[in-house]
Image (cartoon, rainbow, N blue to C red; front, top):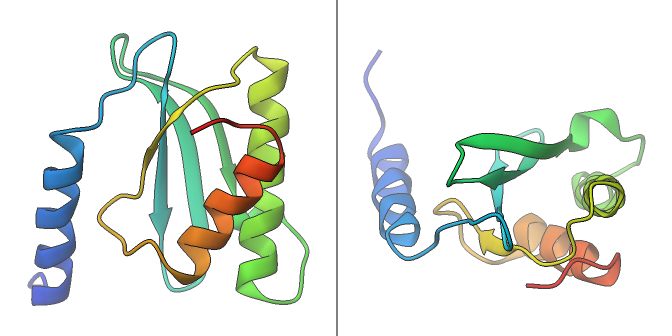
Length: 115
C-alpha cells in the first residue's frame, strides 16, 4: 500500500514543527494526533523519551467528534495535574490549527494547562 500525497505533506509539516518544538522535564510536549474518527494526545518528556500522560477521544462518551475531543482534553489536563504538570509545549502534529485540534487545545487551556 502506498502512502498518499496528503499523508506525506502532513509528515513534512510535522517534521517542520518538531524541529522547533522540544519537550523538557519542566515543560513536556503535548503531542496531538487526529484521525478521521478520534483524537489521541499524549504528554511526552523528550529528554527521557517517555510518555507521561495520555488520553484519547475514543474513551469519551459524547455525541460529536468535537465534544469527544474537548472531553479528552479535560481528561488529559486532569491526569496531568495529578502528575504535577501544569505547563506544556503544544505540538499540533502537522495538522492545521482549526476544528477539532483547536477545540482540543482550547479545552485543555480552559482545564488548566498552560501553553
